[in-house]
Image 1 (tube, protein in one colour):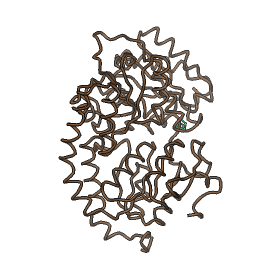
Image 2 (cartoon, rainbow, N blue to C red):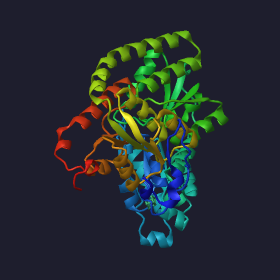
Image 3 (cartoon, rainbow, N blue to C red):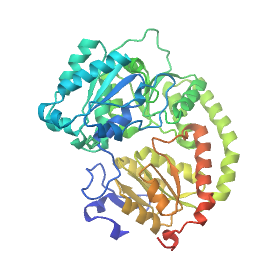
Image 4 (cartoon, rainbow, N blue to C red):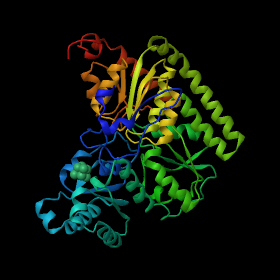
Length: 452
Ligand code: SF4
């Protein structure tokens, strides 16, 4: 394990001992390490992109927009304006003379043509370098057109992807509290923060909450609507899944509007059930609790025979988990355990110290925990620990396949819902299919001693 780690990254890799692992995190990525993290702008884009009735305008070169075009597998129950990728296409002339006028023109054209509910303007690296007054242009066009025009301060070099999440939350904070509800808000109303409706997952969760008698006031940001977000301050509770991206906004709403928040996860039976019980406990109504218990009982009774059948065939397999947010790593460790699979390497791009403490507490001694890792580390650790399965995203898929290892996509462009009880069923099927496919018997597998 030691030869794969750059000297300055050693503190970000640890081995679990007695349920603990001391690890450094929340640091800028090390030059030359080939971090799997995306840039600040991309971090903002993935958070705001699922707002479906807004114009998303990338102020920068066309490449920044192309790189993030249709970046999530998020789906809409209505408008699909979010799926169009607009850019000011800054060129050398704009870099010399400034791009503000071009930005103004682009906003006027887009707002007139598409009549969006709002416009988000993303600042990219070059805009930070040439110093266009993006805030000033947004203010001017907002007055002129009468819709919110929100600057997203997401210059790519400002930090890590996580700083992009914060920039997106700042933009959202500019929307919240600017519209009052047309009708009285039902007493058990929540906002769902940090679910992005990948492959329609949010609709599964909404159905669960509705069966309990809980009203979803605003979705931030999956299948999101600008006017709903503007009214979001009237919810009684924010239920936060992707804590890495949404805690900044949840804290803002707590401080500004007194809306408390609870952190949950919707992946796996254990965490999905806890998410429902936590909301019932918050409202303190025994009827809600009874409905949540009935729902969990029904769903678990339906799922368990299937899980048991997979577990019988998967027990003893070993997995690597490397995903963006640590909350997902935590849920995946539990979900894999239910399938009889041991996690031998666990990591994330943006985990916090408390996340890694939880991960270490869930893992067996000897498990490698890693923060902001890279392909060399991940492939070395996978080989050393004899992993059979890799769970990650688009950047980890080639690592797994080059090693002849089964892979399960848990990234944001996937087309298979993995949240909720239905999602656990899909996850079990996906893991089983990937591990059992006969192709692994035909590929040369250097991790098991074959030729590269
Ligand atoms: S790093 Fe800068 S130039 Fe590259 S995609 Fe991000 S914003 Fe654009």
